[in-house]
Image (cartoon, rainbow, N blue to C red):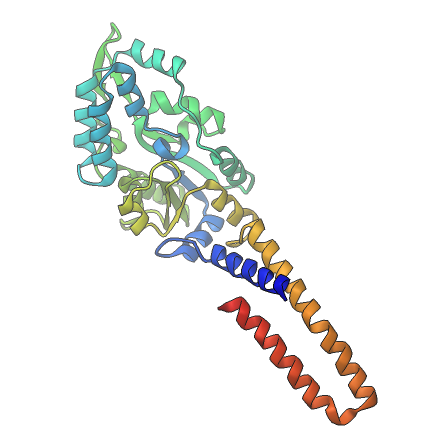
Length: 312
């Protein structure tokens, strides 16, 4: 009986693990991910483990000031174009400084993102990078996961002939508020995609879902930074790219291996618990037919008791 209670406890834990998905429309987002013709990724704090512009600022010695502006932009409390201009004016990075930083402190891929992109590619789903970061930072990362330069939508740093800072290309849609949403809407309209999913950590990523003709679902990623506005507004909010890989490979929101094992183990316990009654019923039928109903009733009560233990 003690083993039975232990197995029931494991079953309850497994059931809880299966019900921890967070989001406004989890099933919708998972279906959209499986059926999308295109999946768009933010880059900073999503594809890579940091904010590229913050890394550059730290390299130049003005990290705290720029990080504060980044947090305001990502949290939605400051228009993105305003935060971008303020951050660049605080740094004024030269071409040599950018090149040196990328050589000495290259951006790092987030765990699992390369595998997720590989799975998407294997399914024939097109992958885009749509970022408020800079092309100079993103192209080396894109090359690592086989995303073409032509499938990158990002800002571009401009330099004078002597390599000094000039500014940024303000004609890029991602340099302005609502730019990511515009990119996604344009992709759908121009390339005929029926379903597009946006994945990212920030408020500007979520905007891509919230305009007419924009992303069909937004999956918030909190593996690097959890932004409460994004967590509250995402169709599906995840902390690991493995969650998305599991949905794509298993064609549904699958429980963890531990949860599955718990369910299977508890099923075995139920079978073992009921087996003696099955033998008893067969014996009674053969020897005392008049006791069949009583025996079946007792077996049913015993089985219900086990199920109640699992559910409570």
